[in-house]
Length: 331
Image 1 (cartoon, rainbow, N blue to C red):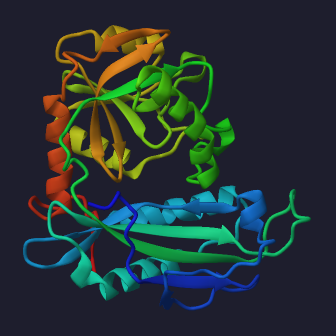
Image 2 (cartoon, rainbow, N blue to C red; image 1 turned 180 degrees about the vertical axis):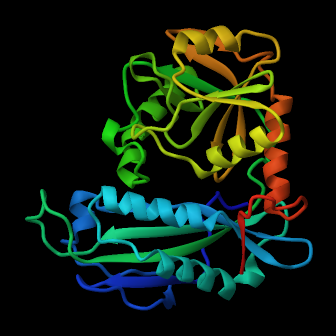
């Protein structure tokens, strides 16, 4: 099977901002995008994106999960990067237009259609290192994906890094390519040296997130995770899982979590940890690595509550359970 996100639909939705207004939604080939070599995005990283999914239900209907939140977050990222203001109604139309066009290609459960809206600065001006782009482009790519856990569910290994940061603190809540690039080298180093799957960045001992996912500690009927601030990404999946947990009667504590408390709680029988994100929903964590020592989380295996919460969200996304929160948009 092709790697996640490496297969694309042959067309994408696109719109251009000319410095004054956005063009209407167009559907064009997704195999090429013409940019000037001096485009702002190529030199000064004026780029942000989103990741969301469309799901095929048993009755054949195709529905997009939490599109409004992802559209709003792209608009927020764009504002924080000083990109042109996003027309949220236009972006919503672009997403629904291209998903509807390829509705027949949306895989059945356990697959889905991954949606990647992207906003980039296009002004050809290499003298604008300290100035924003006046023109930009938004496009929406589609990528059909299969079961993220097709190769089997396993508990991940995380290296706790208390000296580095995923990205600049004021950039954490921006979903921008530069943030992922800055986390890549530490992650590759951790994989090579201690066979870690991801790095959990804990600057000064403050447990934050990995390079591509939010972190949740599950201690009995309580979920503990860092309270929202500008230093890390405000995950839509994170919010969805926490909402479902509260609805199920669990206690959700959004607060500071220090490495010392994390390791102390992780040692307790039945404790679990997980990473939340669009691709995997919830990926179980079985081992924490800190200062050369390994600490199992609970019994080190995939946790029952992690699986229960993942199933609850999956069931809502595929229409198996009621959409009581109004999270699904009909295409």
